[in-house]
Image (cartoon, rainbow, N blue to C red; front, side, top):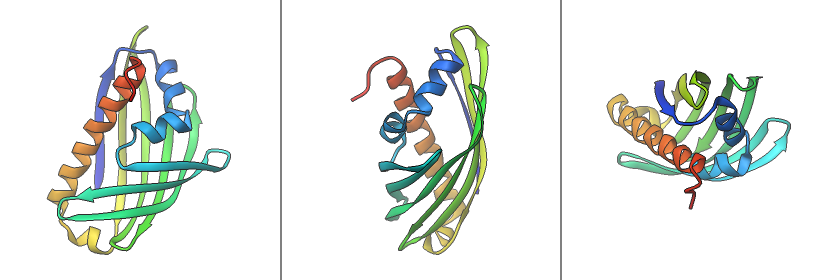
Amino acid sequence: MHLKGTHKFDASANEIWSKLMDIDILARITPGVSKLEEIGEDQYKAIAEVKMGPVSGSFSGNLDVLEKQEPRSFILNIKQNSKIGNVKADVRIQLEPVSDNETELSFDGKANLSGLLARTGQRVLSGVANTLSKQFFKALEDELHGQSA
């Protein structure tokens, strides 16, 4: 499944980078993630509860931050397992300054699904991925403007 999206923020690339590299903030703004625990440099154990259409499950696995080029880009390597299937994904996050106080964040990647997740259907999962992306962008926007919960 292809993952792609963009969003423009009223913040500098450095501001956004610092939020994304803060493990507590990243856990708070990522939809479904209930816990991120550091297990090594740029390596985390992740626990998530995700509902995808008619399918929901608890996922656990690893999240690694690779190829960091501060404050421009990095790759998230995700491996999550659950009773309803497994997810492996590589997603490149790119921060592109538009002006001093405006930055476009884009992501582009691929997720490989197995088990019941893979049989759920591309259309349902694409819709869920789109919704989760919007929730993430909104939560990051709130975090940047000091409106976190």
